[in-house]
Every structure is written in C-alpha cells, then in structure tokens.
Length: 135
Image (cartoon, rainbow, N blue to C red; front, top):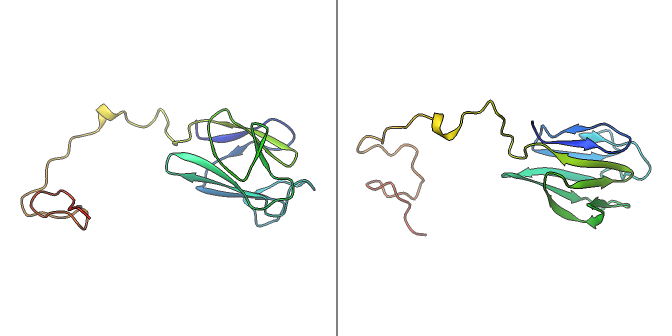
C-alpha cells in the first residue's frame, strides 16, 4: 500500500502521492487544514530518496513527532505526527513499492555493451573499462 497519513483525530487521511506536500490553512497548500492552530504555511513533507522528511516552516504551534516538537525530522512507519490539532500516523510503504512490482529474480539480464559503445556511461568513465575515473 502506498505511503499515507492515517488520521487519528478529526480530519482526512492523506495519500502521499506527490514528492512534496505543503500543509497549512492557505488555499495554495496541497493539504489544507482549517484550524486556527495551523499556520497559513505550516510545514512541508518531502520524499527524499527512500524516506520522508517533515520540516516546520516557522509555524506558531509547530510540528510534533511522537510528542516531541521538531523543526525537521525523518519519518518512519508508525510515527505519530501532529500539526496543530490534527494527528496522523505514518503508514504504508515509504519506498512506493507494491506487490505488483517484479521481484529481483524476475528482471532480465542485459547483455554487455558492444566494444566501443559508450552510451549510458558516466561522463567521467574510462571509455575502455567503463569504470569511473577518480576525481
């Protein structure tokens, strides 16, 4: 199941379907939380590589993770997050994997490139060996 925030109080559960979500009261926010305890632009939730990070944007009432007020924190499944009077639990697969994806054993082997082929090599790669040159 994709990553989502399960509502533990009033308010909707939130599917984390974008790499960056802006939370707040303002109409331009991706997730609008209508409460006087939520700032207009309260916090941002971002997917960085294979994990989630929440960052407070200088809100008055802050962001709490597992009861602790934070300015920035990596999130893990099971963490409880509070924004104003809205409480959520981080749920699902933060990597975006699902059972529909092929397992490692189901991928096909790719034949090595023909001699002289350089397509797909890093820009600093040795054209003969394909290995990256030291920086």
